[in-house]
Image 1: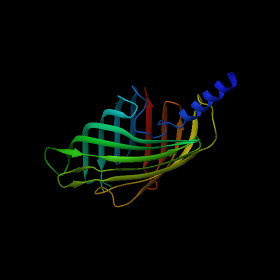
Image 2: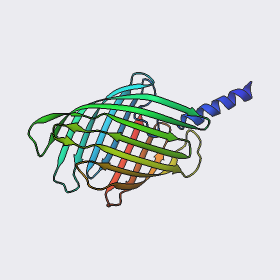
Image 3: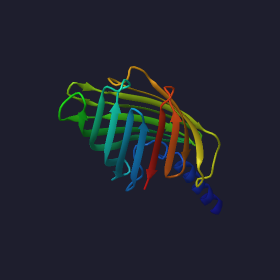
Image 4: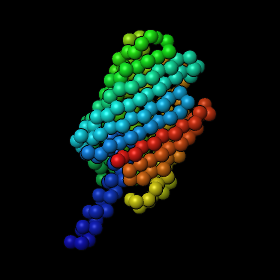
Amino acid sequence: MKLRLVKLVGSLLGLLMALPVFAGPMGFKESTMSMGDFSTNWREVFVNYAITSKDAIGSEVVYMRSDDKRLTREAVGLTYTHLAKRWNLPEAQANLWLVGGLSAVKGNNFDGTRTLLSPGIQFDYETTRLYFATAARLYRTKDINHDYSSMRAGFSFYEVDYDEVQPWFILEARRMKGLSDKTEITPMLRLIHNRYFIEAGVSTDKQARFNFMYIF
């Protein structure tokens, strides 16, 4: 019985190491998650609260700037996140997320504020050693289309215990319509623990990047 219990606890800890701590846009039920993404032309911070194991509500602030620095956007609004599907595999987990946003946006090429709609979708697959994610989000309002897409892949350098920090290498490609005419490629080093991660890197355009996530 004791051996069976030890095996069960070990399996649960292994699964927890592959849960939304990696990149899921919400934490566990009744938790609060904060995430930030900072670079020269893109800055985003959001906080949400998981009202169920599959649903979270929150708020976000987003700053966008075009590559030529001529266009800027500042949006503040509300978000809703839903875990549409989860696949618990023998030594891995995959998730399909749906995200919705409603914001007030300001820009330097139009007067006043406009209502910005930003529905999105994300799929991720992760183990304790490998990670892959792809996401798309629409940013739409009158005469504005800044649809966003990204793809990430990475690997951990070695296995660690549940309470230890694990280093990862992450490579991301992302693009935003109407603000950039090229795909941004950024290699990053990620340090991850059971409730947080931090990432830092420099893109191929020599722009610094810093990301974080923390679950309260």
